[in-house]
Image (cartoon, rainbow, N blue to C red; front, side, top):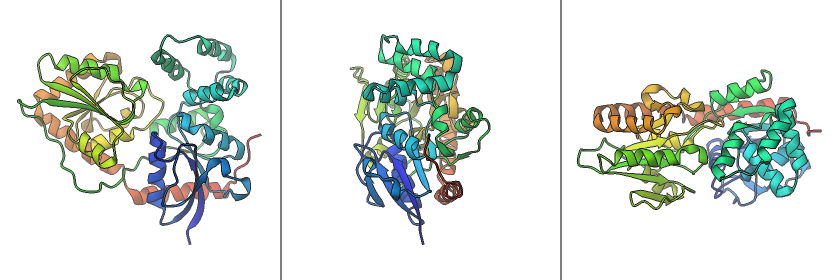
Length: 384
């Protein structure tokens, strides 16, 4: 008999990696877990399990095995509120929820609740942080930088009966912040590809070189750096930049192509047209990049920075550059790869092998059962 469990999360078609991850979790574990998915506004029900809007969830129907997906996205506002009310296992996709908590305060008027998070996190320094955050920012990028500079997540950790995250780097940060509480790292499995797809090959001297970025836009993802990298390469070579995913700003340059959000088969095809991928993040919120894992599985050599969980990727599977040296460090790395096709091939081979190790569905299913076992042994309590 299947065990009963509840997943509280955004679901597709919402443009957030948490929604994709939730659907994938249900598909991978659905043969042994009878899921009910309580979804946030803008989501649509999954075909693989029972689903209901989160606003219709009632306390009388809550199993002890309940998991809340938590990310730094406005789509998680309802999830955070439900976690505070009922408690449960938290799957943390990031270790900074400042963007989300500020958004919740701004849209609901709950500034006192926001203040509680600041005071809990920063203690005697809270007033200074509040003054900085309440100053008007000159741009969205500056505002984003402030939110990253002052992470907020410790109070939310206290609402979680069990703590789960997707990479060891985030796990260490969560454990430190909670005084050594156990943290389960479950990884980021990928969907099986619908059909075999060819791996990219190193470009010939006569080729237009395609540099690409994949996934959804974010201010910390290094878009401006990528534009400068490709502009520098174009001084000597015919290069273009392709951004495959939602939200990327269009700079109006003829050598830049923005695809927008794509159906999965088209997305997989487009990333395989890249000769080199760029993921030039500055700073980290403890996130695991599903889009980077897709790039590596596709066999695309990727130039990445030394930020957060990126430091844990084996050196042979990527070309890692210091974020403090951007964009010059990434431009030099790209030029080196283009001039040394045998290095591109070696990195691409290692990249594909590493990505495949991250996607063992059987091991992942066992991990989810272990998390539910722990939740059932230690019932959740509402937060006072």
